[in-house]
Image (cartoon, rainbow, N blue to C red; front, side, top):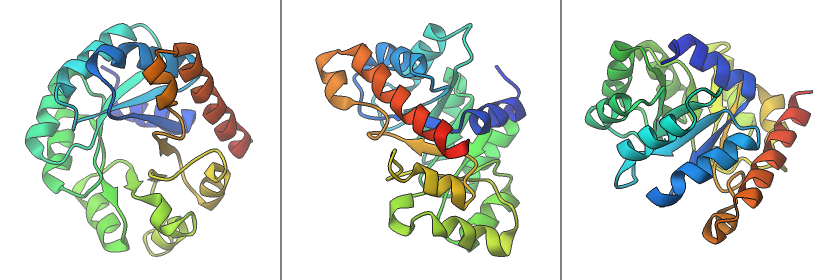
Length: 216
């Protein structure tokens, strides 16, 4: 397993984490492989899947030996955090702020990315030992909210997720995002349904290209 500081740097350097939500267990590996082939390095398997731990372990095995970083999202409590870390998750994201989840991550030296919206939540998350802040849902407040968080708190690392797409991703980076998270804007679920793995790869590559253009 990578050092958590290397994991964080890898996410920031690549600029985007793919949110793999609602994907059948039989499809998770080919989807992950296609998304990674499209240029996405960080892959988030959401913990609301029935067999999330098995899916994380399967993706981890399939992409072993590559530069992929495999983690878990929608991790709502400490027990879930322990389960996904045991399965091999190298980062843990949540839509909410739960300091117990951060504590588990810190004990296991795994990157902690809690969900925040307000300056109070952002400050509490950083004080608890969070590594990145997931601004969620980003579409509710828009890119300008990054500055609203960083203004009173300093240069805190913000990763907006929820409503980020190829049309607005440049606005989020211009506003100060260190990376973004994307689900349906990056993963072509119609292609997944058809088992069109080339289509999945192409959709991911389009989003990666938009990120690269935004940061150029």
